[in-house]
Image (cartoon, rainbow, N blue to C red; front, side):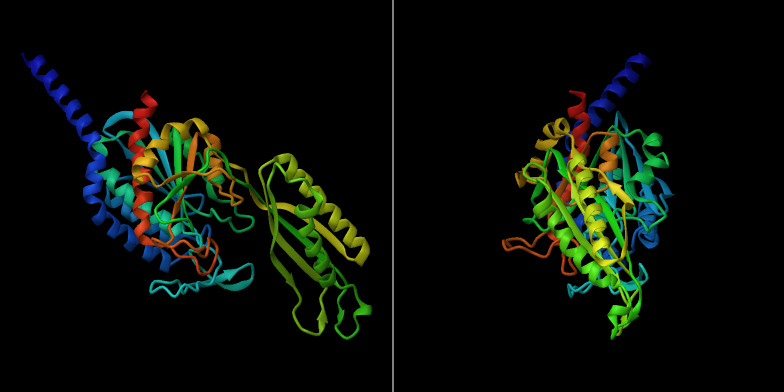
Length: 434
């Protein structure tokens, strides 16, 4: 009789778990407004106190304190400032990784928001403003909200959840390493063995819509640096020296012909951009040195190699023509591979995103020339990385985009991101089982 009672008790427990698991989405809807109030408060706080890559000390502490308050297993100090939380579910199932990036950009904020950043720091030897101009504050806050809901309902979760709060997505300080690649090198996936990884990025697209492209979705990113050495002279006697600024001007003009004139991009998009130009200290001095730093975006490794060769040839020719000495360096601050959304995982999980957004889902067709080091995670296990529209509701005209000093996030759109990550987490074990 005792065995029968125990067996019936276990059966009742399983049925209760399964029944409640099916109702977690309903529970989320009931709690969503209260939870989103916290998410918005967290985002505004993180937005007001931005930190550059590998220096996200305050942000990391805020995250770790929150996760510990939820009795989540926490690791800190991964890849300098990274934080992870591990939620052990009450039912058997896979481990699912959810990732948010934490770092801000060296941008002076011009949004006029009441919680706008006034932070300043030194970057590459310059005094700069610091701003969450790419929306990573939203990513952090949303994942903190996801953590709260999942931790509260952990006994009904099928499997485990690895929460990854990643530093230095925008790139680590030179010589330090960092980001997703470093977290993996330090054994993150070896310790937790996730089966899949999901992530989200806010963007200036329609309010509350989720955009997702299967297959190659975001470009590979390469950084290049060109150093130009001339001979310093008085500005009134340029013939006494060799002007590196004139050579720099020629280089910039010629670099803009690489994509427009020198390579075939009919089937493979590519971008070559100049982001930094440095030279000179005074109006009447022709300096000895100048420097150009920029980015290259590609989807094809052979095309990328061709672009590298074209830039080397351009530099060599201008060096001969101007008498300067020019050196070219690629990938000096790291390289991000193409971000690939696993096609099979996309087909399996698309319905979850449609449900989470109540049909505000778009299968994006065109590759995005932005880049993401989420790509390193998605090289290790199947991954999906979707974009969430955070324009104001009803706004149709183009809004300032990521990396603009005017980029803003409409808080009312973030609930779609939170629901999307939770629905993916709840649905994957069922889909994987079938």
